[in-house]
Image (cartoon, rainbow, N blue to C red; front, side, top):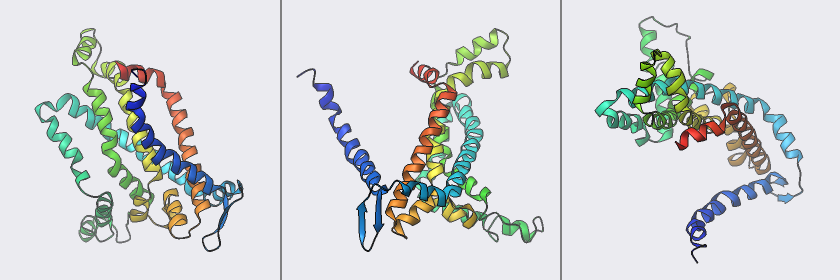
Length: 283
């Protein structure tokens, strides 16, 4: 009985994964190989051409999503790392307050936060309308429906998911290690590059994973802040599922996106050195 105890304790989590992950994935894989329509019904025909057809029709949106997700992730890393560093090493007794302020936007719906950006970036909104009124911007200046607006929205909405894991990693760095490096005549830049940055890589690794995947697949920011030229693959999947009722194409696109993301994550993990990152995280 003692040997079975660990398996019995893990049974609820395995059942949760089986019901809410494995079963939907198998069902979606089955649908992606079917043909037919919503009126006459769908039938399993093992039509692998659904994948090539979907990729041929929407490869532009897929590539665009990867570019937008990648640029937003880089922007979040550039913004988020200094913020996490400041909270971890300079926050002092106000760390809890800074973290609360960081999480405060999450008390508002994701959609509402994105819509508020729509009001902020609109042509005659409180920001650009005022600047145009003062003559600081030309009348035809606009930001909405541009790639910048979509990437800025992605960066804003997912930024805390980059900051928090980096903060946790930096919080575990012993300040005495940095002091020891400086005692050995390392400059502050050298101490950061050779001590702090390597020790914070587990947080960077987790932050990139937690932001790149949802940013690439997100349909909300492109729908609210973008236009027809900034449509992302998440919008296409949503339209195929809910509007066109073309379930095989939507399922094929979903699996294609997931495969591309998994390949990208594998390359990223290999480039960063997963073993070193995991060893540092385990210390």
